[in-house]
Image (cartoon, rainbow, N blue to C red):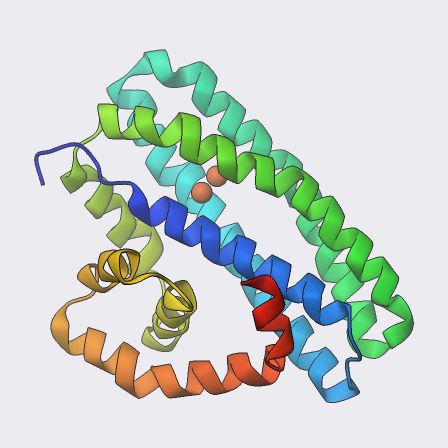
Length: 219
Ligand SMILES: [Fe+2]
Ligand SMILES: [Fe+2]
């Protein structure tokens, strides 16, 4: 815990977002029956809630802590905050387009465009954050500080069903080494509940959402 912050979880979280944005795009490429339209849209909203909470945790917890420990990081952290601010309107536009798509397949092209517009601002940010900000975070705070931030901002405010959904979503298709990183964050008893209590439900919902072909197209 006294060593440098292990920031691998940031890349895992970002990859889950990249994966399901790609799956959403692939799903929009084929026929989408009305019931699946609503399922897809509910998941887009869920992901946008997750993304909002993720950015809030960085803006109000992680980056202020890094800035306080080393004011020299200010310019880089200002750039991260500016990225987050530029992503917000694209998130709102995606939610609005998704709601119209839930009501009518006629909004499909609009939803695809909104997805592209979000990816245009989000994907470069995720990359910059991994390549430029995370090495600075590791060099500035300890793993203990990183862990405390994660608990305070990303774990404690959420209910067990929410955390279980997020955990299974993060581990969806993840390689064993990175899966172990996620599992290590959860004590043994809740880990068993997440994996075996909530896992089958997550997999059932994911299979219904993506209808198989879309998952393959994204992997
Ligand atoms: Fe992030
Ligand atoms: Fe970020």
